[in-house]
Length: 171
Length: 313
Image 1: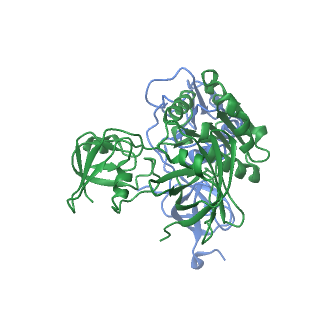
Image 2: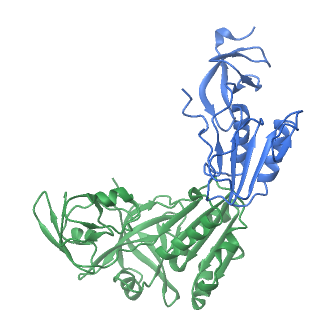
Image 3: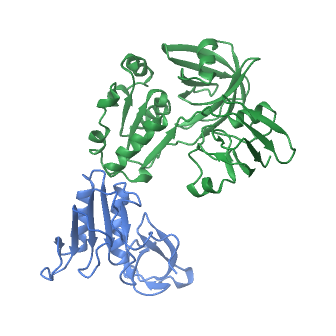
């Protein structure tokens, strides 16, 4: 069961009250929002090194490039924009950090259920961020500590907190 | 629980024939810190009639002993604003019955846009003072009659005039032209008569403002209506509600302990269960389903369709 503090994931639907619509995703297999496709609709996709795979709209070689472009766009955006995001949870939480920074509310920024099981974790000891594929424990790739991945999601940090129990701390 | 503050009028100024600025000084405990957007219910009157009306708090003195209000002579008036305009003078006793904020600033917003009409500017006078002090990004659009522009401009706190646009011709006030240029981070606040607030809300949503970013305060004074009778189920008392009187006012006049807070149909605190009869809902609080069910009523603004309304009081 997903933590109640997680992002409000759900089925993406075009919001008819929006005036411009942007769909961002970290893989070409992500589905666009359901509903009538609005006239002013743009799509940004992370395609990596394989841009010629049939995805439409603007293509990015990496998530970092897409996030940078999104930050630039939102810094100048006017009212009426709606952002829809699909991909891994790590990708979605970074999108959320940017939309939060520029003041978008829940109606203006929507998030699909994560498309894979990896969750973003922040090691509270060395501040390393990494994706954790499994369960409640992980080894920090930064400091080597054995971490318990807490169930509380920090939207501000965009990650679940990884905390080393004293008896499990690396020597 | 605080039951209000005995107070007196300390000072009265008349920026225009229809605007009254009134400073009220407590005769006992200091007023609590007041956040912008707060309103107070003032109880005042004379031997023949008592009023309890809600007014936005424009400012609170640093020592906490004075509150400032601006009262517009309402047309038509149920008498309260006329009483104050005609008779408020330094030394007049009144009571600050309660202080509440149902219209607070969203402090996490990066830009604030306010749109008001007439005396609806009053909560924004407090807002703007706060924005100026904090260096926030904001803009105020105010619709008023041409002959009142100078009076409203004189009410603005220091530095606010440069951020304010006055619109003196409502038919030429194309709000969409302004709103469509707002950054996505902007929050919109509007205050004024029902029809004005509805028009602003419609204009904002038409250019894509998210509904959660539109913040509304309505100056909904109880409307007059057909006289009816209210029966109190627990005691069997029957009380006449006159045409010019709200249901809440009739209950209070009969010394019934009826709850209330905003007195404008917005907060729901005056909700009372209906045992029999058909309510005439005029509030902004109940859902459509609650109205349809007809088993609760907001006594401050709503009335009755039936000749008699039986309440669980």
